[in-house]
Length: 490
Image 1 (cartoon, rainbow, N blue to C red):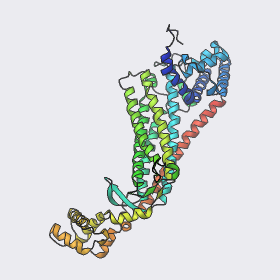
Image 2: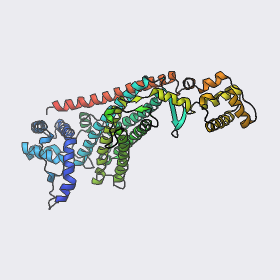
Image 3: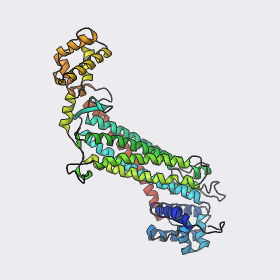
Image 4: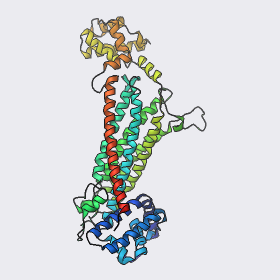
């Protein structure tokens, strides 16, 4: 393997580069690299490049290595990588004349490009599975909170009454888009570079369609240079994860704020909280804190991977390969975050009474009062806005409750603001300032009215069902291919 080089690897190269990577690959990649070996071997035999007799010996040896398992594979860092350690184990069983034929028509470059896509594909589907579970839990809460009235916020200030289901419908819509990005990324990843060779393919008459099919890919890549050089799918996967984590972080931040004593509208379960070492009253929502922090890690991974890849030649290089470190780290962080988010969501307790009472007193209903002025007094909305804005300022200064707003106050304020009195009915004012009725009135598509949110959630449920079916199809297809490879005979 090092015939071109006359000096052995330095201890520093082994310690800081090869051994850490080798141990990580042994754990992460053993099954997939053995699948690649078997798929490539089956193709070599079917094309007559390796005789069936030698092919059977190689296949039997590969099975022997698989049966012993990754943990029992002896690793020699001087062999540099997992593949060469597996090849050494193979040759130790059947000899170099037979075992050495397995590498015919391929290179480390296309082998590892294929391995990286298989590993990425597995991790991506795991993330998809976790998103499905989180969406399922959120829909369960939404379906029980169509009539749970709460304040919606803009600029972190009370805005207008909505419902908890309406808020969760928004979060679910974001997660639905996240899932679609992962589907698109999966389709970019699930194409086979095997057969690209070092970068110029091979003169052996291999069948790339066959190996692609055996490994569960959608097809082979179109260009051999692109096969070993392309890493844009790494950035695409990281970008999709970064957006997902950004959405999770924003959701976590809302729950985090609402769980404060000052808000007191949501409580995380004891099982996902921690206490202070000195302050016995503390109940800290630590899962939400970690999710927000992990979002930063994934953002950093995207930037770091991009930095590794920029200004590299469009071919194989080790600095381009370094980008995978950040991909694997990000997959791990996202998987952890989704598990933490799901277990937190499953046990959330919402203080529905407090949420409702707050909408009665925090002026979130006065936008509808402005709408009522437009309808009943035939004023422009800008005039109505000016009247209500002045009214809010006045009653806050005088410490008058929102519930005390009446037609006389509206008359007095309107005379000051626009120079004439505006008369509203008692019923019109009460209806406008009632959070429940305010929500019911907003039945426009996308709005918070319960019947409208039921439509939204039904649509989200249908989308969830389609996404679950897509995931099951991909998992079943890949599992079927792996089963076929596990039973294949030379």
